[in-house]
Image (cartoon, rainbow, N blue to C red; front, side, top):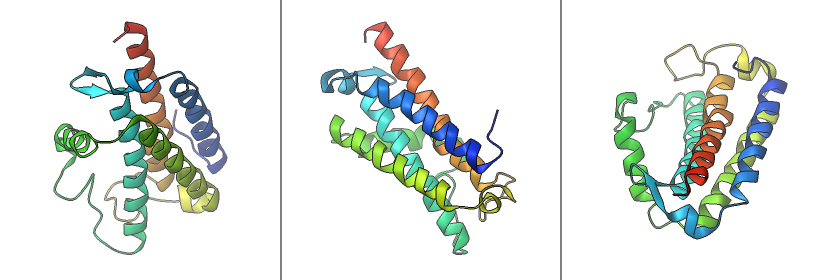
Length: 164
């Protein structure tokens, strides 16, 4: 169930990140770089999660500034996500494991700071500006943070369990 308050959002963000961070701490670079699913590695998944936090924050600030908000990114539509994610993996192909992990940690801190610095009203009183849908900034933050952390943890556990 989606968070409905600033404190719930902060709690779920911290909880899901801590679970993911514990898994990340058990993974060595060779395992992280091995391609497993649709030419995707653990490193790719972690870098992807870091990237989407930056996307969300960009959407938020662009909307507040009255700029055009590109969802998910300029030149892509939501039904282009598979292509977008593939392009993202290609752009990040030279990233190493420590850099991907550092990016995720940095962006997690950006997200938690964003949540802490926003009021309840900022996060949940109405749709996010520029989003052209009913989702609040809090709901978008949850999708970019804890929901993505949860799915990354699931991917990591499955990959580690299968021994790939």
